[in-house]
Image 1 (cartoon, rainbow, N blue to C red):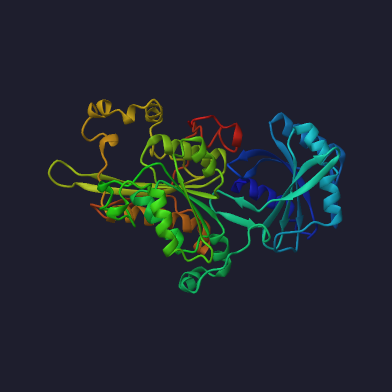
Image 2: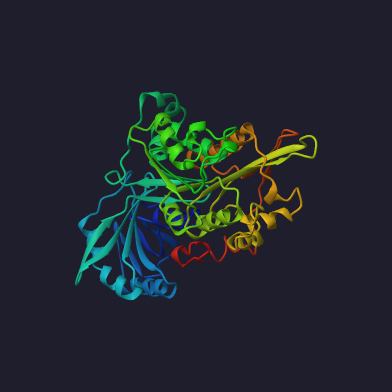
Length: 451
């Protein structure tokens, strides 16, 4: 769910009198290669007389039917949310909880076509637990526990099922990192499933930073292979690696520097603009955009808003001049619900996305006709600039997850090499923005811009 949805649910479910409460919500599906995700998109709060608070809490059948009908009209499923005021960790279920959810699973499936979803909010920690009720036989529904619940937007708040996604622990060499923010934050950070899209000069350094911070699972997606021109700025690459897939080389070398007890490094030779790469991206909790083409950025921008997966984006632009460098810039920001998207920031031109899909950006004769300083013809970079851009992206990610002093959103940042000036963009998306407007939380119903 996004931050706005979380705050509405929290404000309703956590009562001043310490009693339990409940409400319904509409959810939409988001399907990756192996992960099935429910996106909570609309609260359905109770009207007078539709639910009864008496220490525990109960609801009337008319309330359920109203919520289920609304979910069906919006092409989604129905979720039942309730609170356990004094609880701290991922919650189990009482007999009353099981009866309330399983007893309505059949009707929920019949009305909406989707499984019933149940969520419990632990009031003392504001951590969630969740489960689906899947049909396994006629009039028989089985509880399928989720492995995590994530809240995205300004701050990344994760709740993990300790049985399905346990903490992997960390090696002794990570002690100084853990001492910076504590074991609870490290346990949350290390269990995030992170995807690095693009294994070039910036992406390889980002992946190295994540591996050294104890992240257990990192997926690397890139279709490119190592060339001689990469040797001046591609971390871990050696001359003997020329011709090998970048992600395979990077995964192999990260295994030596990873500090998680059992690191899982997954190389995917492919593009996020292909079905395989796209589905792998939808399996992640956070994505790092380290691509240099407009189509890839457009796909990742759509994922951030349609599927509620934050995308940490950035890059480098060098103004080489004709005879002497005039300057360079690198930027970093997070695309997520409630934050300014990549298109509104000017990180890609929608017109160029279609040109790339039509193959024009791989047509050397077309590129030769562009002006010399056109962005599509500029590929200058320096290892130090790539390292600065990667560091900026990692810091954006850490701010979102660690929230030092309670501050999680440092906004989009642009650093100017020549002047040493840092610009901060505090604007929201444009009022007409497609991504933060009509595309928000649509999940699997999002338009097809891949393949």
